[in-house]
Amino acid sequence: MADLNQLKDERLKKLEALKSLGINPYPAKINLQGERVSTLEAGWHIDVNQDLDKSFLIAGRILSIRGQGKILFVDIVDESGKFQAVFKQDVLGEKMQPFFDYIDSGDFIAVTGKLFVTNRGEKSLEVAMWQILTKTLIPMPSNFYGLENEEELLRKRYLDFALNKSKRDLFYKKALFWKTVREFLDGRGFLEVETPYIETTTGGAEARPFKTYHNDFELDVYMRISVGELWQKRLMAGGFTKTFEIGRVFRNEGSSPEHLQEFTNCEFYWGYADYKDGMKLVRELYIEIAQKVFGKTKFNIRGHEFELNSHWPEIDYAEEIKSRTGVDIFNTSVDEMKTKLIELNVKWEGENLERLTDTLWKYCRKQISGPAFLVNHPLIVSPLAKPTESSNHRTAQMFQPIIGGSEIGRGYSELNDPILQIENFKQQQKLLESGDEEAMMPDWEFAEMLEYGMPPTCGYGFGERLFAFLAELPIRETQLFPLVKPKKHDM
Image (cartoon, rainbow, N blue to C red; front, side):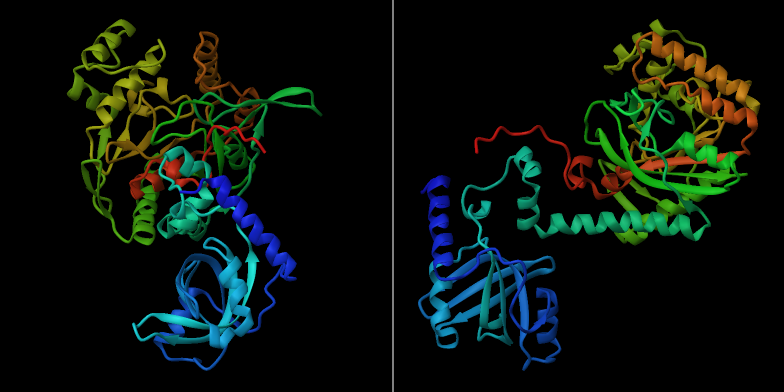
């Protein structure tokens, strides 16, 4: 088999041959006449027997070329599918030879002609004129060396999309996911807003941020780790009642099937509402997403079967851990927690009670199919949430949907007591100073805003991880261009 360099040399010769014939191998536009249709639309015209005497124009990438001599069968693919173009010597005359000699699979072309059905029942276009749109210099993978390595698939995502319509269809579905979210919130009176991506203090989540430098202001800044949580709360103080934002988030931490360093999240804030109101709204939102995007509400994922359009019970955070592990999280120590995690063969990061408690909960979470709402989180893991009034300030008015063993979102009655918020920020500051890089940075200007007053508010955040989860794919595969390590090139 010829190596890649040899095949590229052959195509370079064909490129020069086309130029010598006065044919531009990279024109700026299509110069053929005919009604422009997609491959899907061309098939529809044949199905309904409409306008078949007209001249139609199809453009796309050549998938394959079959035949020889006086007739060639060429499969052309575009965004909507595949269609067969038939090149005949007696129709094209002298224009047939340049195609036969210098055009390859992978090239982009436009063809014009009349639609018909072959004797074998294949929907086709009889080519009257053709135009090269892009001459390719490297053959497509399926025609040469294959493309199976995951890193290569992600690095050369364009080839993955070109060869797999199902991969392209996934991102139409993802676009529908966000469209459904946007229409749902807009239909309930929420205003879409935009808040800063670059911050002097990160807030709204516990994660290690990406740090950069602002040359004009001469100060360190950070890429945001939440979708404007502390900014949207400022909007509540400023007189807005319902806001939401869909945007990118950046967290400088590890990767997993459910986590990436850059992803899209949505957060909404609802003034004069509490976490109970948020739970009702989120359940309705998730059911609508399932129905409109996936066409169902019943799923079987990772061994968990669940029906979203059902009652979502509440699960108490501490009681669930105690029933599954025997640990009373409100009456334990760091050493006792570590002993239990070792016994359960669970790895952990961080040496403080907050991190260990969260790790123990995640062990329990994986065993819950749901759908359910996790409630009554300990305040130590929810520094921006309002305390539960009956808990003697031990638990928070917080909720998380638990679906298929995963947490898919987080919301709470937002803490609007400035004195308590300052105390929580001081606790987070101590965690940062002790080396916990994921602890929340205190935002003292936000605390000052609370002193001016913010109304009772429910906030909630979730992201594309919900889409990836319901699509049963690692989140990396549901991003158009996830980050991969660069490959060294010798040009």
